[in-house]
Image 1: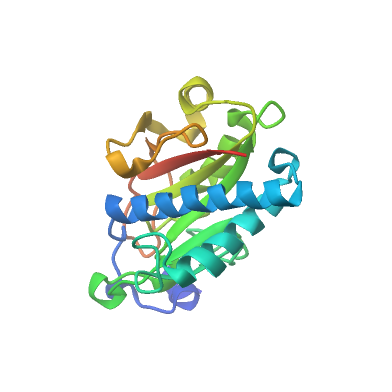
Image 2 (image 1 turned 45 degrees about the vertical axis):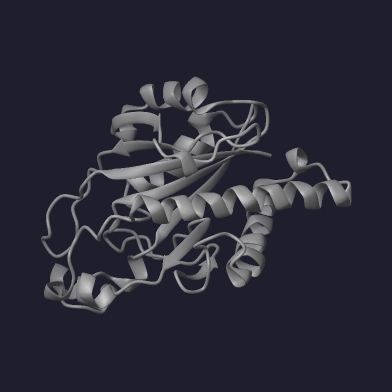
Length: 248
């Protein structure tokens, strides 16, 4: 089977029917997701308080499941956070299977996917790959920023496992011991040339990016991606990673 035929089999569309990269996710949309995350963590902490449960002792997958439950079953359904509703967003999913950029890995499972309601036909995108893809990782003494967060999380975006058609993605940090992006993530990235960092994390200059004692300011970094898109559509562009760190 030729490369083009293999691509058609995997994607379901001929090359002339879609473009790479997909359009950027505009900052106002990212900030809606960010506000929803902040509110979801507020509710999770309150749920833990009422249940006499220690969120800091809760396992990563359990936090992610609970976070998804608040985001999808409560906030999106009720429109409790401005803009985060059934009009702008489809169902938020967890561990939905996706293919990587060259279809050699067909059962990749990002932690969460925020599917956007948009005119995908007009934008000529691959609907299955058009979303805000999210990886969630703990950040603490046992899980330094250079460990799971970078090597098993962020790297999946650089290598083209997730969000390979997109220009943006999101990392969520479950912070347990006061670690910070500047103090811990920045040095970790500086020590990892394989992550192809073009620009180190810096705060998003937006008043609604929400920072408080339990939530660090939203940051962005940029990373080159070394792979090539299918169907001879050229080298992948750099990807912008948003970093949203929350006290757990």
